[in-house]
Length: 274
Length: 108
Length: 150
Image 1 (cartoon, chains in turn orange, red, yellow):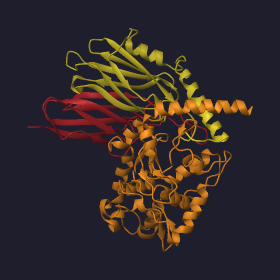
Image 2 (cartoon, rainbow over the protein chains, first blue to last red):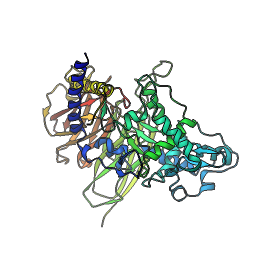
Image 3 (tube, helix red, strand yellow):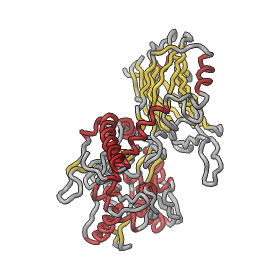
Image 4 (cartoon, rainbow over the protein chains, first blue to last red):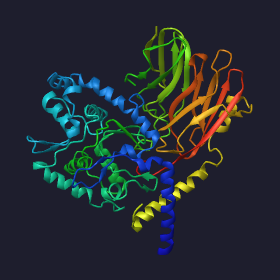
């Protein structure tokens, strides 16, 4: 039996290598950036490079990219007064194009006040509840994802630059531990797919390095923008595990660690992925 | 469908030039094939028609079915023989129509 | 491809089976009203092969958003232009995809849209010219279902 499985696997592997080359002809020339010393990858590669030419084309043109519907919606919201303080985002932050430049590329970031890191979604909601005195937006709400996309978009093209030292280092270690821990009925860790097998097919899925530089991303599957923690949830669900909660400390640690795995990649928000 | 449609076309064209027009609107395009968490079918609600006119003459139009992806993208061409106004209209199953206009000038 | 362990080999093997089985679905009889829709559009007349170019991916990255570009050869003058192009998909719950209506003011009979394909199937275009002549073209798009993107 093991021989039969073995030969099937060899055959399958050979056939898959061929189909991978046929479909993703650009495979050999998948471009990335050199990783810093001590990094897990030699070359850090954006998820963009793992997608078909059709999907890339959807991201390449700002009019064709449906993620810009969110950018435009949030650009209006940025200026809209909400809450009992009579403030909009703009009241404190002015023009997002200048004040938010680079902000999204450096998230999650340490908060002295909360004594823990916060990500962009959390920071937006902190602004809402503390400064605007208005109900925070729910995770996965259109409003929160739109605003997260809009703020991240202001860093488009800038390198991902999270800080992982100082008080962040235990969070980084926690995220790393989660990354390498096998979970679910399929018994897979993040690393099983995205470190050991990126550039290969798992059934119909062409695995990427699992980089986060394009989030929130417009997924062809969902036909809407997906925030990072929803994708984390989806991955854990796909391996038939019990996902952590969005915005939990676990996912925040993982967000920090995975951002570091993509350190230096240009922010692509709003990207388009499968 | 309260969002403003996104439209891209040149501001000016030579007389007789064929220009490309790209449009994108925000819409779920609920197909009528899906079920909600309780297993009840979600009723169809799509943009079923798109039209483009130039100086009130038809340029391009289409009838859309539920097999069109959410946030419909429609790209087509138009021949510009004079300066004027493009009028775009997206018709929803609920009868509402979102309209937009774009002007184009002739290059000297 | 490097060394792979048995589990990975097994997972990859599943992909191989899925990819090889899929093309067969395209040869199946239309599971919907594609035939009737085309008949209604053409009035039962035979459409000739040619004039139409369909730009569709051979394998869709995801069936929910498949970019489709159409080009029909035509001078697009008042005397000779493409009037209508019907798109049907023969493996969706309903065959209808879109009907595009051109005029001489379109300048070119070209358009791009994004479509949903529920499974591997044929996308069929039928063009009606201003003189009543009919042309058709079809393309098979493989759609993978299941997995992380499915």
